Image (cartoon, helix red, strand yellow):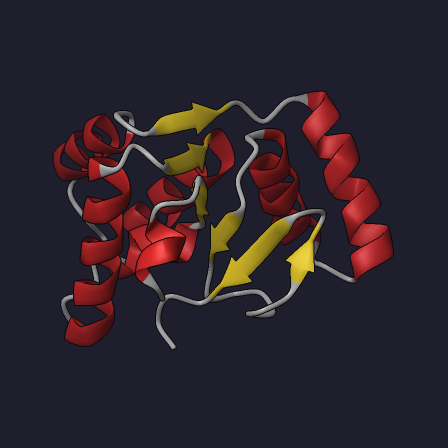
Length: 142
């Protein structure tokens, strides 16, 4: 992850938020926390309602974090710009799912990044280096 990428409007996928909680993976946790901090400081980070929902689901079910803690994290993440996933974004996601062989949920993440005018999508789950509709996928953990 280059310093230039941090200065670009950037969409943050769920796995970055999850790794920020991963005390069992300290290197990934450090990378995630550093990325979130820098994107917040530069006001270039964007999240979506989908990403926040997915984070809460993992935090409750897999990480078994206390609800009070999850609420505090949400309050912090709400300081980023938040894209509301609309029916139009879902339609665009369906199109990407058909044309780019992305899972439906990944396609909606990409469509949300496009709708927000992001140049970069930080995600571990998609093909790093690929550019989809002007959004370059970057794996911050590699």
